[in-house]
Amino acid sequence: MNNIKSIAAAALLAVSGLTVSAQTMLNISYDVAREFYKEYNSAFVANYKKTTGKDLKIDQAHGGSSAQARAVNDGLDADVVNPKTGGNGRMAYLAAWGYVRKKGGSEADAAAFVAKLYKNVPVLAKGGRDATTIFLQRNIGDVLVTFESEVISVDNEFGTGKVDAIHPSISIVAENPVAVVHCERSVWLFR
Image 1 (cartoon, one colour):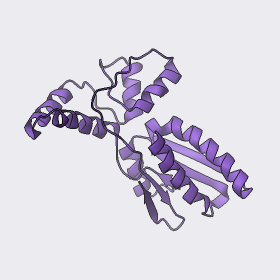
Image 2 (cartoon, rainbow, N blue to C red; image 1 turned 180 degrees about the vertical axis):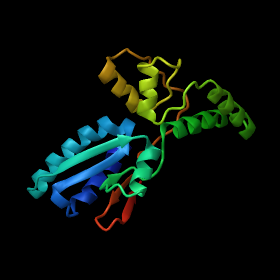
Image 3 (cartoon, helix red, strand yellow; image 1 turned 60 degrees about the vertical axis):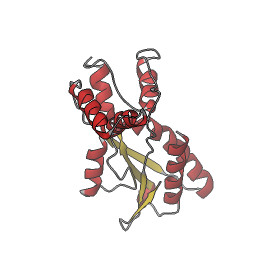
């Protein structure tokens, strides 16, 4: 989480030097980052006011990472973005593959494990938040593989103890890439 905060801080600080039309910015992000950016944007707006004396409003738009990336690529005028499709599904796939490899399995073993795992998936959701909704509200599936931050959101929204969070012995670090989209539509990537 500290890496995400550092990356977001760098991106939003870079934006603070930009002239933002009507003092409004649009932060486009994947759906499981909604709560993080809600809190972070609030802190950034307060700091921006303190350091520049100017008011700033940050609007947010969230959805599946692939859909968000396509929307920006198709012309959605964003100021801060997740520039790649990261996706909960991709991270789950890589974590499962890496688990087998880290335990000494071959590439073939990893492929077989991931294939077996995905055969048990009743629904491939559009995004991480959609997967959470399907799991908790529609009661589909026995296990939800998701980001740790999403478990915290579930605890906050549905109450602590609604789900049992299990941390695997081997996992994957999923960092949040951020891009600042300048007024001329040039993009800076932060990692």
